[in-house]
Length: 487
Image (tube, rainbow, N blue to C red; front, side, top):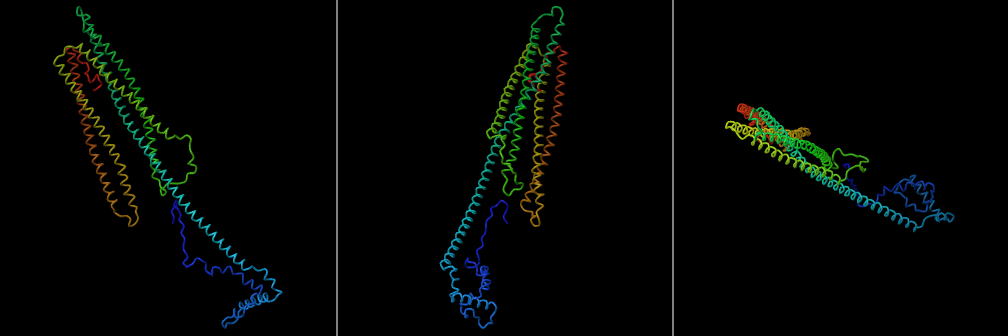
């Protein structure tokens, strides 16, 4: 039985006899009308001798009587002059030979024509089969090349998306630092104003326009200038974040389209003549003028990547400017603060050092909390990634249980699948244990963070009390890390 879509090959059976001529019995149909002719002319064979039709002692039958009558008719035709005119209507021996030769030639010509048609048809079918296979191979090769192009652009998009996500996170962090730094400037500004207000309470000769007052007025101007520059850069950071997210959205949408196209082309690349799900779709080969071209297709992705790169460059430049601004403003405010506050007690210095140390530990703890949270997310993703391989292995085992009769064999694939399921389940168990350890560690870190923040607030309150008690309100000025945006 030939499969659908395969080339049908003709088979020819050679006759079992030693020659190709038909048997005599197969040609009996050409002599069926001889007896009626003899019946119409019973004297046709009268000229033959009786010994020709004589049987070996047998009784004459009706057929032998008809042959005798035919011989009598022929004898009368041959020997009676009045009946010899019937011989003129017969064919000559040359006509008989020519007729045979003509039949031979016609038979040979028809056989050669049929044989030529058969050879040409077989060759045509073979050529078309080869052409169809070459065309299908070329199409598969083209789809494979297209898959390579999609994989290349997908990798480029993935790389650019990762870079953009990293850049957005970095810009978000700088923006948060800028917001924190801007919020931190409000305290020194109020302290400076409070100091000016308190100094307005001076009485008598002490109410002078001295250097401290001049520095306080200058400090208020410096803080106002820093706040204005921070607000401008904060607005720019918000706008740049919107542009970055828009570029990321375009990249992710293009990436999603590439993933879908790769999945479809990969399925088409693996289609074969014996695959399931193939069918006729009439008119599907018509060209759609609205479809994109390879140049426009690659240019679209390239433009998205270039646009994203330009936005990343602008974002990186803005981050550098914000970093410089934070450092500059913090230095300006801190220098002016030091110019105003020239006297510090040992106790206030020790409290400030402890506060800075706690802030450093808190920053490290926050960083460790962030890394632990990232580890937890990574473990959760690893657990999700193990679901599909486990499903595949279990599905293979379940499908193989449907093998009929003796085919339901515990072969090497079965043992390997069972081992694979157990390995994946063991991996999931270990990952779950590690996830629980990471979550416990995160709780400990959060508890440590709360403890550090509480201790930091205690130190800040102690410092505030020392400043209030000691009339040194200036010592509540934020530290350098807080002015830069770190907590």
